[in-house]
Image (cartoon, rainbow, N blue to C red; front, side, top):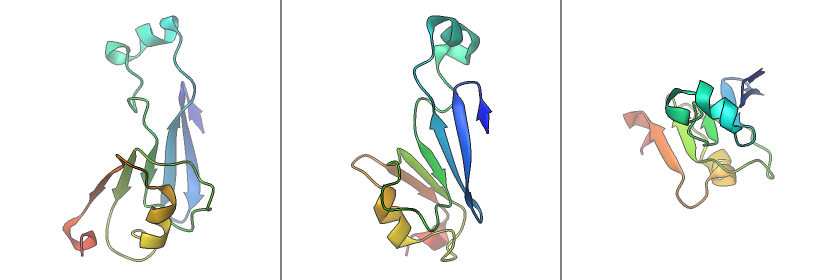
Length: 94
């Protein structure tokens, strides 16, 4: 699904990928609050699971809870890059 300059992809199960598409034109910047796209130009994953090896790297990862199909270390390793932020519940931190 695409909404303005943002693409939302269902990854299966509970996973989603939110990606800004292109740099907004000057006209588009005027329609976004404060001239910034809603994602701040960041690639965001929510509960990534069964991620392909060549998947886009994440700027931000949101994990809802610690079940293996929402908080998979193997999948996180495929999308983490230097500077990636991970936001998770306390039970995911162990």
